[in-house]
Length: 170
Image (cartoon, rainbow, N blue to C red; front, side, top):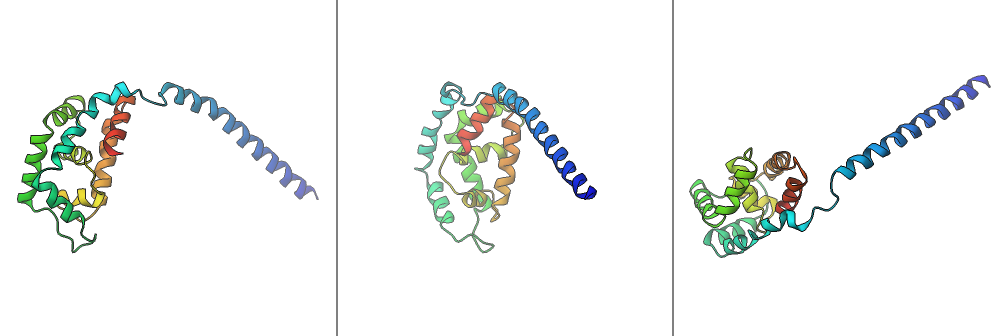
């Protein structure tokens, strides 16, 4: 009987500790949430939205048609990827059609690599993760997910960077 009473008291003590620990966290979470704006104003990223017109122009290129045909493949090891020569063509088209976007990304976020900027440009057009991987010469979609995670760490240093990341990748 005494052992059962001790167990009940133990559960009550553990429950009370958990209750107070959660209660103490709430003000911190609320305080952190208050320091980060819930909705970044459109003004913060509206100047980036003009680059969507460049994405529409990109859809008129020959390389876009090739990307769409590659994207239509069944994902797997047998899938054809964009050849090195065609990757150079793609890089040239992206540089030609997204010069301001690329320059601004590099200027505002100097930690971004050329590959990071390339993925950001490709993410402004509607391509699947698999299709983007093919643009980098890989059939593995995970390389895009890893690079996206790396970009997120580089961009999301402030509210404006988080809004930009969401704009590019959503």
